[in-house]
Image (tube, rainbow, N blue to C red; front, side, top):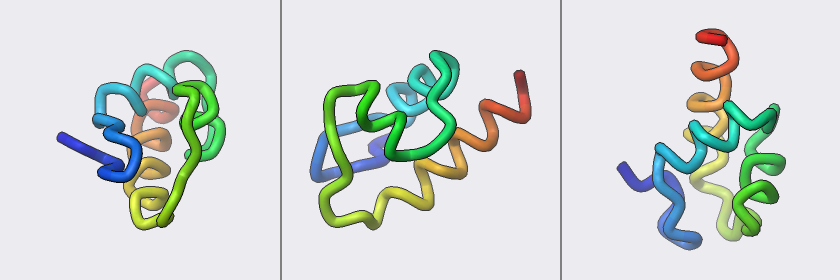
Length: 56
């Protein structure tokens, strides 16, 4: 599933960034070499990161 259309970031990309230590959406985007643009994806990315942190 696509999380961020502006940056073509997939859910799996955000999950991998979270597993690599990203604790926020902005950290995940930096890990991927990108940054949020319109911001509509941030809540969804944050929820994915929270899921990954809870599972760890």
